[in-house]
Length: 309
Image (cartoon, rainbow, N blue to C red; front, top):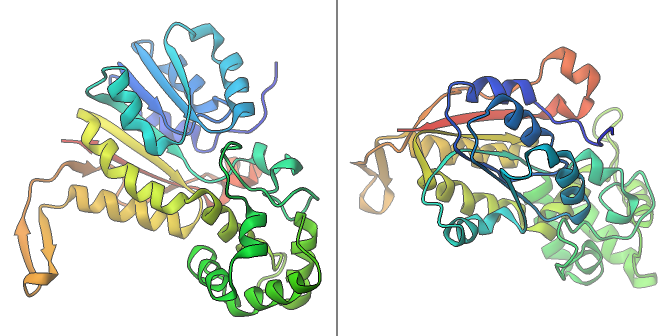
């Protein structure tokens, strides 16, 4: 059976984990299971692979894909921010490796009913977890203009954030937004194309998705926690797809690798601390030209790796 969604930077991930003994391994963004399948094939020593995903369709596909290793695989329906709860429940005190493939998958983008894409008509949903209450429609139709502008500026880094927020608020006075194309058309009329081929709705849709799923706050919370769980010599690998994610990943990793703590409240002094990790990738690893040609989604991917001391 062929499976949807091509796993990004798979060979690079395998390369950086090839000498790590992965008795307990976590795929925190299981998706369709492509990365997990590759690790199970490459690391016969895996005793338990814990896979986490919020999307029931993705989990179903991953479960079928990983059937040959079903005695070694445990799949959980949850957000990865709750990983520590599940590790405690399973009495796992340390892990040897963990990977994150952040953002929205091509499989989700290709499902109009999820509402992630402005290229296809679908409900203004954008929830990665379908059981969650907050949707993109709630934000677009109910949030005040200043709050909309703030998320477009901070989560989308949208240059015309004021114009986007104003256009939405004015349009919803006449008609409530109910689908993706209505919102995309409103933004197209109100905002210029910033780069050739980049739709005016691109960054606003990114901002809405991040806000709906609280992606950045969750990432800031989980990364220090998983570093604590890594066993000595264990590795963490994170694939991000835009600057906001990558900035958080870079800062958390650099702080964990540093032997100093800045104490701005004490006159800018620096205190000594023990580094938790060493940086395996000083600069992010990017996809090869060959991979980008086969899978354009990989174009913006950046991989960072650290190892527990």
